[in-house]
Length: 285
Figure 1: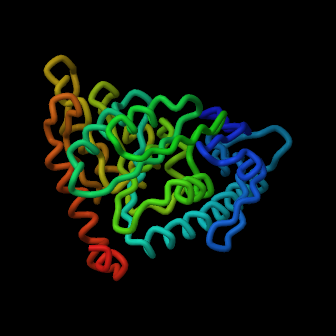
Figure 2 (figure 1 turned 45 degrees about the vertical axis):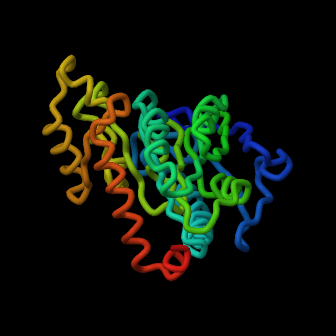
Figure 3 (figure 1 turned 90 degrees about the vertical axis):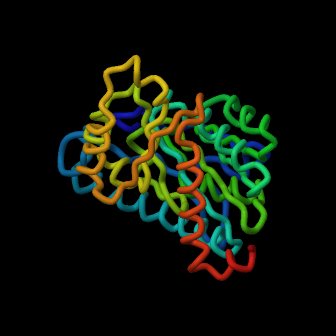
């Protein structure tokens, strides 16, 4: 079990996929890669970032390297799958309560009619968020991770196979609410987008540096609440750029629509950059 976030072994359930096809350990094969899912990553004190009775720091480091290396193989397979089909994928990450799902719903409504979209939803339990997405008319698939604190490459590989997104489409992956473990797990996405609500505090990038270092964009959400809060947008932006000087920062409100145009423009620009270097995307256009 992860000493910080409580991640542990539990039954992962993917809508429409038989449990025997994705149980623990997995027997799933995607683009020639055998998928096996483990939850042995840890954070905390010591050279390995954790202290576990009976396990040396060097052994813990080796386990971490093995798990992340295995996940990277799954992510690379996903990336090939997406690239070959000209599909643009974003990994949305945040802490619980940031307004991630509401922002995604409004994003999908804005994109409606301009781009076919699909959503992969990650939560420990319930299909509430996937149901909300499906109300917009966008196909969505729920992954329940049980005790797991993040999505990983093999889960997303299963979800892509089940969703079968059309060539040239966009896939939004809404990760489990957690600012720790999702930072370490590549899913094959084009970009990680970190969503930070103004109700959380300007120092979140400093407290959870790995997540903001891994993200290409930070969305400051719920800015409609700024008149009622003691939140410094400039300080939050400065803290994020202390961790990641290249990170782009946009302010948005899912409730009022403020800043959504800028967010949509960023999506279109990021996709256009991928389009420029991908023959499959050019063909899909």
